[in-house]
Structures are given as structure tokens and as C-alpha cells.
Image (cartoon, rainbow, N blue to C red; front, top):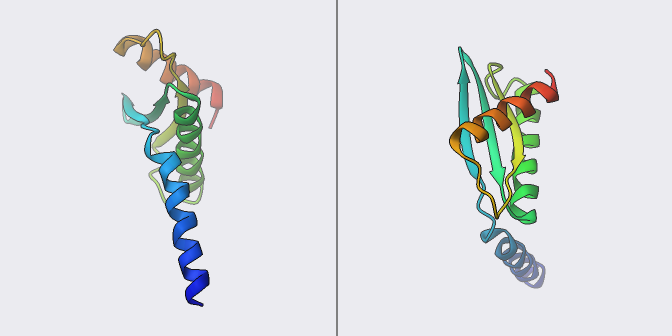
Length: 101
């Protein structure tokens, strides 16, 4: 039992090391009472994490665990050309509209 517990803790620690570097930015866009949460990543690891966060958020929303007036999307931002606030807002809204209900 002790050996199993130690190997589980080591495996969890190694798994967390790879995710510690991925920092996803979160933005919200208010559209007259309907809120869109945009998870934005630049690197492939950040984009994957943003997609997981948005997918989890949407799953919880469909299970009525999150407010129905909020929607989550993942956005890929180029690490070279950063989006302005207006471009980012437009990208989040476009992604939400393309995704559907």
C-alpha cells in the first residue's frame, strides 16, 4: 500500500510539472446580460489547456452547474502578433457565435 501511494504521488508531481508552465488568460465579454468567457492561449500547451477549460465549463453549464447565461470558448492567439483588446473581443464573440448554443 505504501509503495503504491508513493508511486502515485510521484506520478502526480510529474504530471503537474508539465502543466505549471501553461498560463491561460481569461477574458469576459458582456453582451447585454449574456456573458462569454474566453480562455486564450498562445503556445500549443496553453491552447490545449484553454480548450480543456472551455470544454469543462460547457459541460458544467449543460449539467446546470454553471449559469446558463454564460458561455465559454477557447481562443488561439499568435505568440508573435498579440491581439488588441478590440480584436480579442471580436474573436471571442465570433467563436461563441460559430459554436452555437
